[in-house]
Amino acid sequence: MNGASPGTGAELANKIARLVEERGWNQEDFARIADINRHTARQILQGGPKRRLRNATVSQCANALGLTVSELRTMPLDRLLPRMHGKPPADEELLELLYERSTLPGLVAWLERNRDRAATLRPDEVQELLEMQTPGGAMEKLGVENCVDLIERRRQLVCQVKEIAGTEYLEFLEQFVRLIYEKVKPTRR
Image 1 (tube, rainbow, N blue to C red):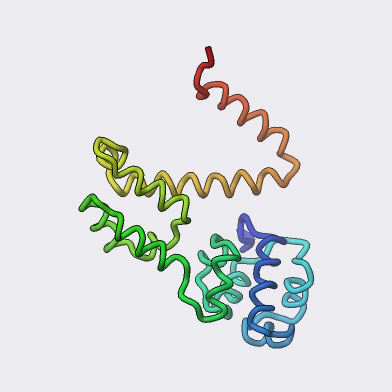
Image 2: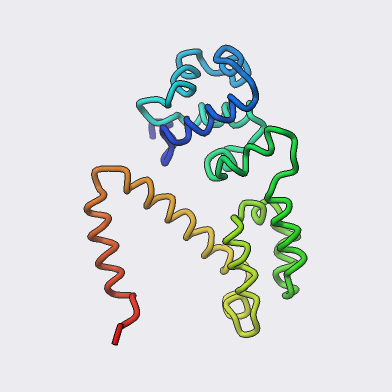
């Protein structure tokens, strides 16, 4: 493997540039704090590199910004920006909502064991998880871990589809999705 990070590129570079701007760092500050060379810092801050960012570069940028690599890659900018201003992260509010509305002991126990993982859930995913608690619902049938796993797998799949959709494989993707959709869509009468 060449050390390039899959699923990263101009979009991730633009996110990093915006966060660097929020910190008030110039190019030299960013290069020094992230411990990256000036050329790489310039590429990131001026619209993104022509090639994918290396895993090591993403890691160094995340560390400099006080984030994990996962947060930097997956969290939307609007959830990261409040952190740059010292506000409590929105995911803490979501976690509290999830704790308050959890009615199944299994979900509460899962939340206590997996706080970091639960913090990565988006608002729509939290709502979906809460709806799965209904008596006889998915959570009772599949278990909490399986329900969360399904949500996370779907999120990852959507990210991968978005990445593929931006390539020369868009037409193939459309054909593939159309074929599968025809197999699973409800029959209309």
